[in-house]
Amino acid sequence: SIYFPKKVPEKKNNIRVIGGDVQPKYPVYVVSKNRAVDASWHTSHRLSQMGIYHYIVVEPDQVEKYKQAFNNKYVTILEMDMSYKDNYDTFSDLGNINSTGPGAARNFCWEHSKNNGFAWHWVLDDNVAGFYRYYRGRKIEAKTAEVFTTVERFTERYDNIAIASFNYCNFCHEQDGRPAYVLNTRIYSMLFIRNDIPWRWRGRYNEDTDLSLNVLKDGWCTVQVNAYLGDKVATQTI
Image (cartoon, rainbow, N blue to C red; front, side):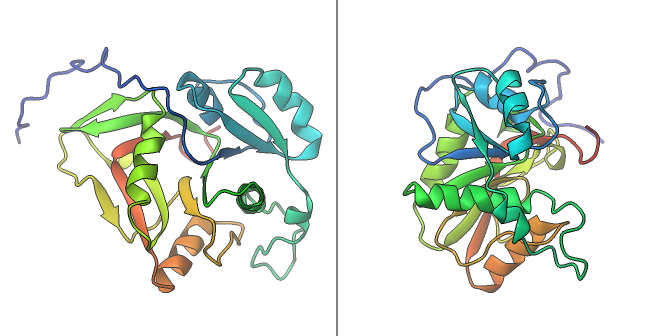
């Protein structure tokens, strides 16, 4: 096999996508639990490097820990209303005796956004180690809010999109030929959600799949963006 154009190791190591001081139009939420550490793999750490103002949503008993760990101007620690957890549908006959997963916190973000007058919101897992521009078969690290604002501008051109998202870095290999986006597939981990759709998060596992299937069944479109990627750390490795 061959690569064309020729693949040159380390060619892009010192290249970054930077620039622009425009903030995302819609609020950015990171749901987190038991990860009160400003580490390189934490989504909030990367968002702060990109100059993006955002919320970290945590349960009441962890608020102070997170305030100490994420003490910079880009972060607002938001205390979750625990009634969202008490009333969360886990699809379990046993009720909520086990973890609800992140769905309850995501529903809280959804309503917080609506109550503040927004038509859309971003909700991200807390283990996205970086964002990349996927350009001509190269993944180039992006440290600019344009990663988010570009997706917002594209999505708002249409009235039938319910959810958009960045694809995972691991699913787009260098030198692969990929379109800029893919329509009507599952949307995971880094979601841009329209607030007026009737569905909400539910289920303890694979709740992303459930939400994606529900909006598609209702006739809405989903958009998975390949032009920008998220470096999502593998589940249960942190």
